Length: 137
Image 1 (cartoon, one colour):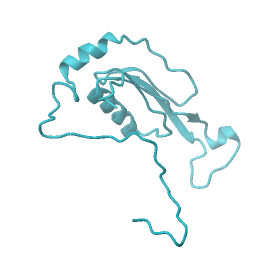
Image 2 (spheres, helix red, strand yellow):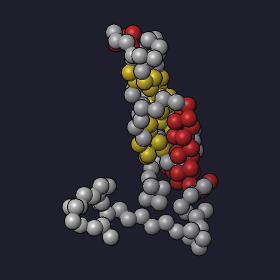
Image 3 (spheres, rainbow, N blue to C red):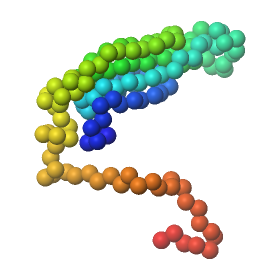
């Protein structure tokens, strides 16, 4: 995606853990792109009037964590936790150019003399079924 020039990476999730936040910051920083991660919020079982086995009735089922991150890994908005809401930030695409002068993973720092990657983007089936009399060679 970096080689395609991604400017805004969208990463929806239900992962509310701190490590997800760190991962999102890393991707934005490494790819020098803006990143938007939307994480849903689901109230606690007590608020929903239900009970979930082995779950603290007061703890949200999903605590949110939506965040917007800049191309240097800085948090521009969020993370929004513990409630429903809207996270927004004004971005300046000129920051992308400035950030790539600092580091460009597929530009001036890449080493095509040492490593190349080829990606086949043609659609393919993930599962193929064959008749019992056919062999997959």
